[in-house]
Structures are given as C-alpha cells and as structure tokens.
Length: 253
View 1 (cartoon, rainbow, N blue to C red):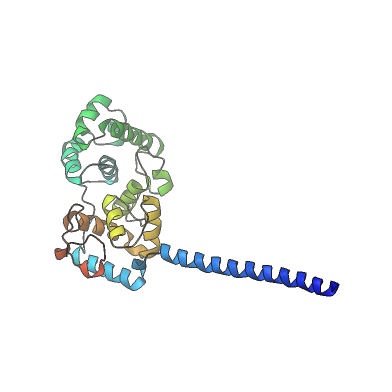
View 2: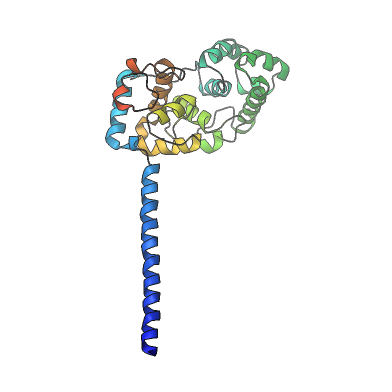
C-alpha cells in the first residue's frame, strides 16, 4: 500500500506538471496569436509595393511645399508650420526672409517685433522663442550653418524628429527617418501601415516597411495625397488611385 501511495504522489506530480506545460503552451500560442494581430495585414510586402507604385504614379516629383532658398530658411519655415498650413507659412516668410536673412538676424531680433511678424502662424510667442534660440545656437555653436546630423539638429530649440527629418531629407537629401506629420499619421493608419498613434512609433513602423530610398519621397507623397484627395473631413475615394488597396472603414465609395 505504501508503494501505491508513492506512485500516486508521483503520478499526481507528473499530472500537475503536465497541466502546467499544457497551460504554458496554450499561453504561448495565445501570445503568438496576439502578436500576429498587432502586426497589420496592410504591411504585406506586395501590398506595400503596390501602394508605393500608385503613389509614384500620382506624385512622381513632389517635394516639400514650404518655400525656401536654403536649409536655414527651411528650418525656420518648418518650425513655423506647427499647427499651421504651409500656405500661411509661405505668406509670412515671403516678407520675413527679406527682413531676417541670417541666423544672427533671428537670434538677436526684437522679440516683440518678431512675434508680430509671425503672428498669423499661431503660437507666435513659443515659436519666437524657438526661432531665436535656434538662430543663436546655429550662429554661436555651428558656425552659422544648419547641422547635418539628427543628434545635432535635436539640440536646437523647437526641433523634434519631424522637423529634423524635413531638413535632412529636403535640404540635404539624407534619408535618416520618415517625416511624420498629421497627414502621414492619418493616412498611414487609414492604409493600415500602422496602428500606432504616437509619431515616434509610427516612424519606426514605416522605416521597417518602406525601402530606405523611398523614405523622403514617401512622406511628401502622403502629405500631398492627404491635402488633395484623402482629406480628413470627407475623403474623395472616388478620385483616389489607392482606392482598391484601401479598406478603411470610412471610405466614401
């Protein structure tokens, strides 16, 4: 009888271990399925290639809509473009860049006067601080030249990854990352290329899915498409050459 009890205990232990292994296996499978669900169906390489081809057909040569004559002007325009349309920025900078020509001009400007000059772009007080700070740092620490690395650009007041990517890509032709603005955020989600809402995470997703030699053009194409066709309030799906590749819930066709 003692031996039977011993065997019974062993069997019980084995059974418990078996249940734990089964539960663990199920949990593993569940996690795998969950991970699969987090990766969007829209990132299939063939589908991504088709999207890029359609964008190339519609917008083969688009570039940044901000009017500028040099990297510093592009930097200032991009800072001004936060929560503001490019059209408004271009109207403001048409006279702004005549009045202020160099980083030093902005660095040592009269703050109240500069605020009035850029007021139509909104958030003019914060933008004035950023522009003057960026101008001063460029003038005093970078020899009057806009830096050409992401790390250095991010040390400038008012500059985050979006602005840095605009300058590096458009002014210097350097594909360091993908510009993620409101249009890129919205369209990337609509096209199921990402399910993130944080710009940094969206950029990481797009950098994995889009070939590096397309990073600069791709963001410009999405921005133009978001302004002309896939508008936020009522997307013009009937006019969209991506319509057959898009399965967004709020399509208008």
